[in-house]
Amino acid sequence: MPAERVHLLAAVAMAAYLLPWALKAGLAPAIAFSAGYLLGALFLCPDLDLERSACLRRWGRLGGFWRAWWRHVPHRGMSHSPAGLLVYVVLATLPPAAVLTLAGYPPEPRVLGAYVAGIAIPHQLHVLLDELWSALKRAA
Ligand SMILES: [Zn+2]
Image (cartoon, rainbow, N blue to C red):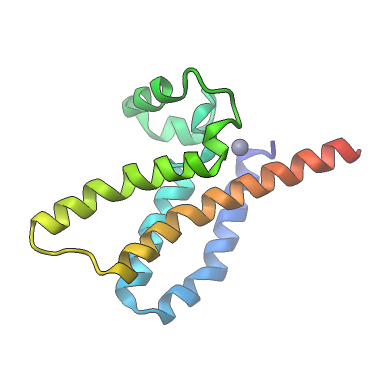
């Protein structure tokens, strides 16, 4: 797998490319996209299943939840799959959406979609870089 700083650098470059597009959708979707993107790039990385990952260390004591979650899953198993992404999206989206809805401020679908896209894009970028890295290693 590429070094974590390669993943981070790619995520920053992708964010710089995508943020103007998000701003065209409006301020609220851009903020939601940015929040989701930061969450996805820094805290909900596919490498949460690695004990030594910076992503897991960022969770501090709360990282125990992810250690328990991924204990029986091999690295690059579910965490790097669409199912893993779905787990992250559900865990990161349903609680805040439920709280906002119960408080009388249900999120607009386009804002919610921007938030989910913000979580999903860095996840998929990470998986793509991992696959590319593995292909390059096999070819060498
Ligand atoms: Zn990975």
